[in-house]
Length: 419
Ligand SMILES: *Cc1c(COP(=O)(O)O)cnc(C)c1O
Image (cartoon, rainbow, N blue to C red; front, side):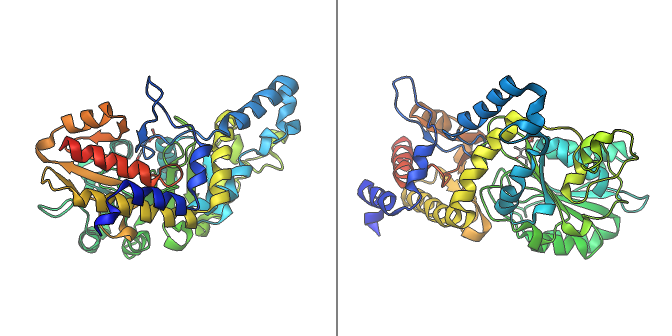
């Protein structure tokens, strides 16, 4: 197998890669001398498709020429612009179109969904999250608990076992079996931002539902990375952002999933605005409120078209390629990164992400001995863009859209030199 550890082999893999051409459709950042960075942080901010500018310019021009008439007369009329994103976004996350809408941003959406799906009673009010949940999710959950008169002590943490880094689904089963009568909601990261672990969502949903707990999933690190099959998984709701793997630009809008079984439940309590009112009568302005069905029934406001244009540019690419092909490449590419790191003879680093490709997306989390942050700094000085996450991990995501096998080879070659 030694031959795999060579630039020739990596270049050959690129030649055989049917998705290699996609790389040319993205702007790859460069250093001051004009050398391309080796970009491994598409899990934090995805790169810009070259087509994005054209999509945004279209809307700027329509606005300049048409003013308010653009709502109806623009090439892509703004009134229903979000509908142009729905089918493609639904495919990315394995949902039915009625289950998906693009709106707001991730943490905002988690709150709006909890308004409907976190309905605590005096006896059933606790919320389960992973001990290593993303801070924003933890703060959101804490504030929901307090809003309802409970406290942050009412969070139940699903923790890795002593001496382990990853979550064990048996432990979630145990928590829910033992305390399920007190638990109202499970809000779990589908792919953990720190370890890169991808959970079996169907199993998480089944465990939660066995004790009548609502199950919500944060897919920030899943959307555009793994195939969560949200409809099949049977979770109640999910939310994600589009600026990570979905390459839609900093702070761009998020996506929301509400399972079809809730689509026609007009009795679910929710916050409302004119944008979740029946679009046929929205502009009559004086109708009694009539909520839209499906995920669209959680919208509040008319959305920012410029952000949606960037999402459309990106989703058109995802649609052309398809998640099946992306995942196929992704498994090979991440497998290659894992193999090459494994060849380095050093106990200063250790991959904590699951080895099984079905339990991870493209990200590998590399734990650094003694939390030596200088290694990350040195990588950056060598034009390798990864990120450091406290306490001791370098996250490294070879995203299949624009990362080559050669990039991966070069990255590990430099890393090896630094160790
Ligand atoms: C990136 C990320 C967020 C960020 O939330 P915003 O509301 O988009 O700022 C939240 N949760 C998780 C799990 C994330 O990975």
